[in-house]
Image (spheres, rainbow over the protein chains, first blue to last red):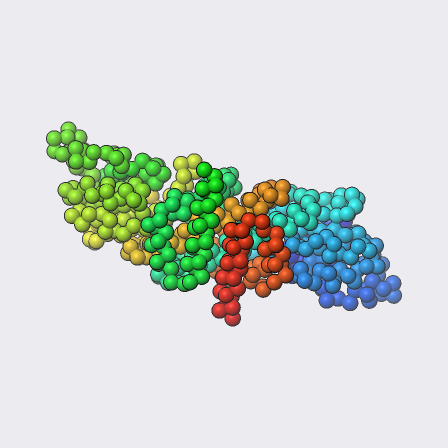
Length: 251
Length: 251
């Protein structure tokens, strides 16, 4: 049985607790707020010290900015200490401890349940033993476990910003255009679902459609004239240009 | 039984034929290529004339540019003539005939089957009788039938470019970033699915996350430095700026 202490009480912590609670090989023995007084907690004078000392791994699930400060307080703990961030290097964990990363690649919010089995977990560690430990930990909750270095993980996180954060913003612009014209955004939902489903099996470059792809200047000009918001026009023009260039290169 | 002739043999025609073939109230009596010699076909000397004359509606499912030319040849046919385009006005159909629009809002490709029942069909006609006919036709294949004018339909088509064509291009950029870093694009697929699923029930503005939303300048600068392709940097910067402004306005 792997014993885990999770530090932090945000969305990632919440969903990890949920996922581990359904596993028979992992026991979350404690969840500590990120603002805890760790020096007191890890003092041998603390009556709970022995309990805390039983942990195999500490998962620091705090905001990116806080990882360094929080994990800095673990310098004297001879444990595997991992953070859960896509964009932060493994070296943000102090090198006095056994450093690691345990990054579940998904967007989490407390209102939505997620099926952790399908969520890729990207792991990294400096020692082979630690990598094996993280592998066991990840496999306890997910069928998709990937070893990668910090550079690869950061690239993945950057790609995730495009397919998640930026895509959601395009949904928002679509919603605004609908609202301005008294059309329900619901009409676009089957299209959004199909667009996302297509690339499950097909390469996005092969399923690109639309006026930019087919160089339909007439429709592009009409669309630009329809847009009242300057930023929306800029986004339309830039993405249209980028699609054109991508598909010219391909010829 | 509604009798339909479809003109055009592309993706929309293919999927409409499929959908109507499963309906008991609609009979597709013929499918004519867009390049047919319609003057010969509609001549009373044509032995098939009577058969063609039985049609209640002609669906012109050809490319946007061709709608005017193709439907222009129907001037002498006292029938309901509809096109299937999101971005073309009802007036592209000659006003000598009964004009209409029958726009299924979905992205079609021959390789993928679609469930027509869930696809919104936007209809428009000048006469009430024709609108009723189109309503019956649409309801035969879809549970989602909407009357709207050309301006609303064009707005919807524009919004669709953002949520479908542009989103797919962001998937493509995500894929490129993965390839450059030897990470499989498959890792992003659960995130893409979740991003699309979230807005089924939640407003996109309420589920926006990421460095732009939280004004995380540090991560934004790191991301820009990671991007080697100029166009990708421009897209990152513009969408980041747009997310920032959208969420400042909201405060």
